[in-house]
Length: 329
Image 1 (cartoon, rainbow, N blue to C red):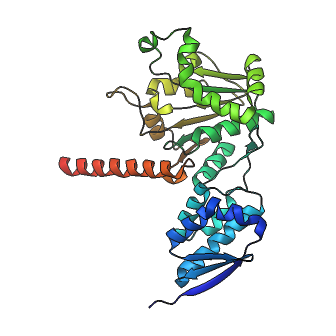
Image 2 (cartoon, helix red, strand yellow):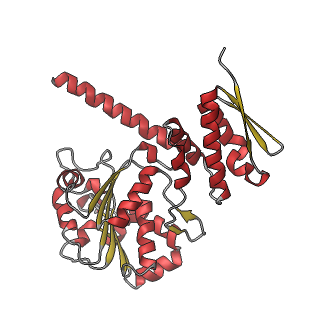
Image 3 (cartoon, rainbow, N blue to C red):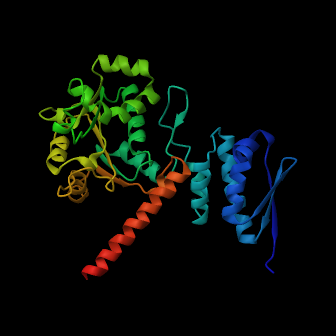
């Protein structure tokens, strides 16, 4: 029979709810994942289990307690991510996640990178003129880029924000929709509006839109322009053609910063078309001033179920790719 170790952590009452979670959901997740027993009584948290697992749980809980002391809200996602770091003996990185404040939403909620991948992404944006953020849905590619854009705008680092997306069906297939071209492409741009509303507030967004300081437009509107002193975000870049991507990247002027985001696994282009994002990723990687950040399912910060869905699809696609490789060899 293996030895059972017991460890104690002092956990002040004011931090219990944050660290434990609603109905102790965080504790239950830690118990199940690390195969330990957690018992809370009179300001002390007792950890019982195999020695190496008790030590891992102790380090993890101390890191979560430190986050709580700093005023960081501990979510199910942050606990799951902290556990994944703990399994790799990387607990020391847990408390680094809340040190990089980008800005606050209109409700006062802090916007920070929540994973090591997101932290690298934000650091690349600060250091480079052009950054490609590539990864699956829910990894914060667009939202963090938007927060960085708003922060730069408020700090007078740029004079305007330009947000664009390819509306790949903005030709004949949209002809049946009522209204002018702007109302036809608005559904494609809605996620960008939603993020700006949350970060800036609708009043500030509307005022800056009227003054021309914030522009949200389909990619086709970028042709023939030179974009100086602007923070420019190209979203859903996997749906650009190589010609569109080249056109966009050659619009960049002095004093501008550009973020290109996309998910290479969710292309809406015709089956025989090549993605401009794929081509750019291959030919621009060695150019100084251009950064590439590859986010993965581990960087998903939506509901934990989304992370599992993304991982399941990744596994399925990898299995199919391997099977196809065996058939052709």
